[in-house]
Image (tube, rainbow, N blue to C red):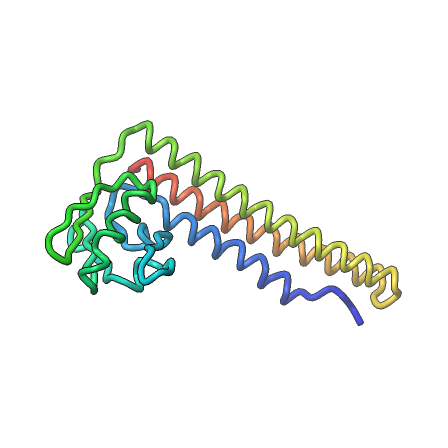
Length: 185
């Protein structure tokens, strides 16, 4: 049976792009975005839980996030988790509501975040190239086992390369858009 599976390669490359989008959404751009708090986990009830499972997160204003904690007992752990997340946010507690004013970003911080976005994009490109290599290896193995002809292999390799190029272009576009957003352009 042939090892090469175009649908699997497409799925894996799409996964790399989705992972990049998730990573980029976590980068702060100076505007309040509820996805900024997605990576935060809170230690409550003796377990680590995502913030969105112990509170409602909203962005009532462009430069403010609010976290409505459901259980009063969880306010201190939520505050602690937000402070230690390394996002540069300073929680202000008001009853069961935790306000997170989004500070202005310095030019230096913007450049740092822009570099991080570039690193995320490169990680995604590497993942796509690894998927491409796996596909090419599978095609060569199929040809060696005489399951496909040399012409079929070359045709499929061209397809894999086109898929790779399209996916890398998608990654570059996403990273470029995020860098412009971070730099405030």
